[in-house]
Length: 308
Image (cartoon, rainbow, N blue to C red; front, side, top):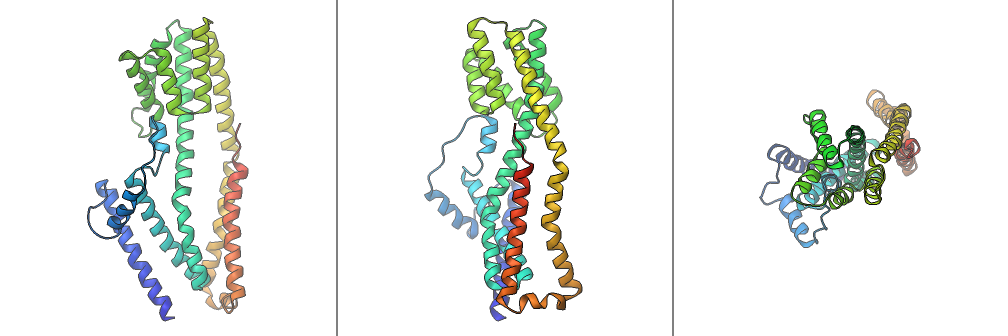
């Protein structure tokens, strides 16, 4: 019992220190230069080799964890989530061994958050790209050149997305048009644009434009047909996401509802759960049930994620 109290106090101390550091980051936008947890982590970061940077706005956003600050933030997230999961495991399993195993799961929290962030940014990019190619196809159909169509597309997106915080397609278009104004050829600028975003739909669109332009085909007609195919594909993807939204919500409810029920029972009728904690068998079964709930969450996400 004494070891449990000591472990809880140490966990609360680490959680408080980590929370203070995270609060400092949210307020000032940088890490405090002082001794303590951050300083020790920064020493570890100086030893590691820096990752090669990728070009492009979307690529930089998706390349999370390459800078020292991002790695430091990862360590803080691991610390905070690890302590919280340890305390939750101690409350749920009432066993030090399974509580420590629960805390170790905090290692996977930053990676999971990054994947969710990447998926969100990709969806934003796809929706903005659909608006961009519709604008380009409309300008080409009206008789404008591809270079003029790109400028008009930038202006149209600026009106639609100027107030939004996340606008990766507009930022890339601004960079594309700026390169053309500085003397970069249209073909080279489009290739840089394609490589920076590194999305299948963008690659298909740019390749169609480059091939048609180099072989002297009807650029407006080819872009119009390519735009129709890409927009139809994106529309179907959005319809699938809407259709599977209910199933994703059900998977989340099936994951977290049993944990909520157990916690309510422990509060209202503590004696009801005592047989589960009298031996290692009960605690092991509780931990196994928690693992099955976690597996249910990820399995539900994998089933409802349909790619075209």
